[in-house]
Image 1 (cartoon, rainbow over the protein chains, first blue to last red):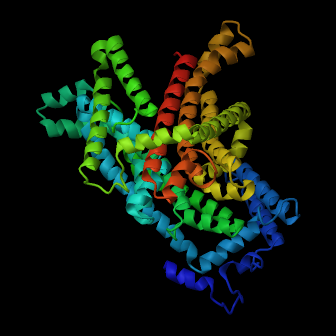
Image 2 (cartoon, one colour; image 1 turned 45 degrees about the horizontal axis):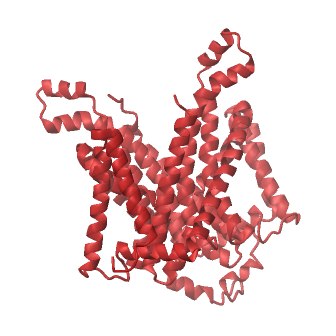
Length: 306
Length: 276
């Protein structure tokens, strides 16, 4: 669903709900999930886990018990009026709101937009960071020259780059992608430099005695030795890049799509259910990306060093 | 520069750079070569930048010359704006940093001492940790308004988790053999903690502090773009809305300096506290 259609729907007279604007439902949400139903579901899940306790680890049950207790508390406090439900919505409201957003297709738009931006930026960061790191590790003279300039540029936190990048590139996707790239690039580059600097001369000699040329030395010695450090750099770059994606989407309000944009936009309308739900979604997205990356890189991270 | 008086900022810069170079060459002789090379590259970069703007190859609205940026810095300093915003940013960062260490370290020690507590809290911690700190910004602004409190909250969350997790890991990973040795030598439980656990755990904890510092610095910049009413990030944002690129670059330079200074300070602290 493109932003134009989202704009149109905001002032659509929906027959089903009778809303005149998107955010009318803040005051009258369609309540599918009532507090009692929610508590019942939690009790059912916990009961099931307790019945299955012989077949699962005890830590699982205890962990889920904690989560269950916290969820019940979270539900009880705003519903009983101890905290203002507008500022601290109970999970039932959050889930209802997310369901509405999902049924209208907005959630998938925002999630996909964020993923796209991150994928492009992170791919660029790896694609440029690893070769640059390799080049810089080759000669320590070059590193001496370029290192301090890079250190200065690295000391400027990527969000501080955002306004000047927006001035240069306009307030849209390229600016957000560039800032995420900046965030992820430096850890990856430094990890690569660190990795390629650790070379065991004994291994190099071994390959040479077996008649290997320079490419063989590179492929058999340099690459396996450096991969663990590169993987560490990639994981750090992932963390920082993800933070920068959210920060860029929060600061550039003209983007119109993206989960970060979604939660900032919701704040203007005091729509804390979307904010909380959006935060949860961002957390889950980050978890997914981290898991996928770890599985993809697990093969290389366990290589023996030297 | 033109025939007016030399700006104090440029003077300070030049003196500090020259002093650094002289000191390095005097103290370390040949080993100062990388430092000299680095500074030379920086100066060449600035010179090329100045020449590019001078020759009119770029739009000066978007990319002003370094001398213009320095003049802007000087003007801000003389207005008194700079010191206030610098102080704001520094105050926020140090406050959040101190709060984070003050909460993460004791909590980490507590959780590490009771493994069942850790097992109970693990799913919650993992999930909350996965939410990147800038994502807390709209909620923080909603609850706490604009200004210092949301910024401190966001930066606190960013710094808290690395220190907390590293404290737990540092204490857990203390090899039991060290504790056994202290016990064998007749030490009490307190001796065991002070002479075995603390020296083993401190490097790991300090790694967490360094990571938290890095995260906190990055997140502070993000928070200052949207959540505050003073500070260097606010200065950048305000200058941006007025398409005032010398101002933007001046504030960025200051953030860079501040970051380098704080980082050097942290490294010195680490060297003093953990000589091993």
